[in-house]
Image 1 (cartoon, rainbow, N blue to C red):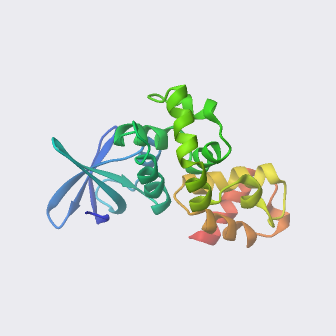
Image 2: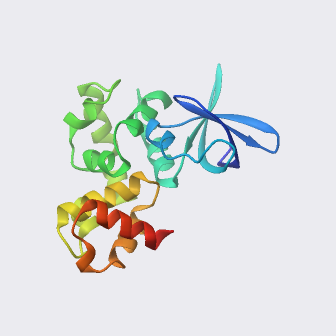
Length: 198
């Protein structure tokens, strides 16, 4: 099982990239949200990967964070959801929004994703609600609890940082270090947090 790739970004397409590792080019399928956060072609890249082995196919799916890869593998445990549908779920919304939708039973949001009908959305929620809540503990109240500032603004800033590839823990800790006076807008919080994280 290939767990991660650390190499040079050689090619970017609409749904996959090619990563050169020691002279071997690996074709890796990515969520569309991750494509916007990639380094430039020719630069170094690390992808956390999930290998799918089937009778007629051997594919690699890549993610910029371990949390995204974990959710992808959890989605695959639901009967009727394959790698392509799992990828489209991760492409549709930021990680925390998908997690919140699953833990809060928001079938409407999940069924709005192409390839997911109402029944599949309900089944996904029933099968994954407990597992996702335990693995991510990303309920908005938990994410913003103990942080200064307006809860909605802080929650949106956390979501923005997670979508940039930072873990929920890193996002929370960077916002905690900013100081209450600077928590006036999502843009300002993200800018200040990135200074803490870089």
